[in-house]
Length: 64
Image (cartoon, rainbow, N blue to C red; front, side, top):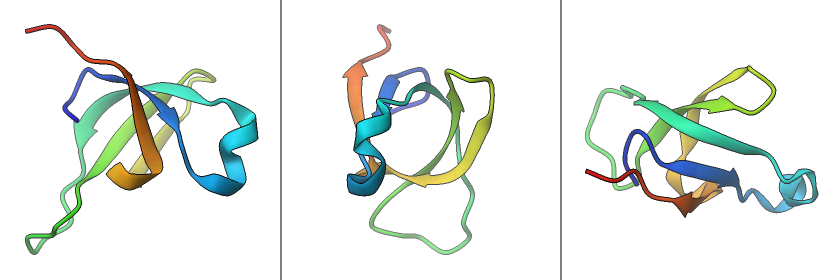
């Protein structure tokens, strides 16, 4: 997963909402972690901060 990818919210209790967004930045959480967190610009115009990579599913990767 990288900034610019089109993603879907894949969190189990919200999966029925079909929320789609674009990764606009990587969250800075301090110490090194196994999983990454991202800032996501959702289709309704809001920005989700600290959205974990395991709660997202890549729909379309950004081309280099």
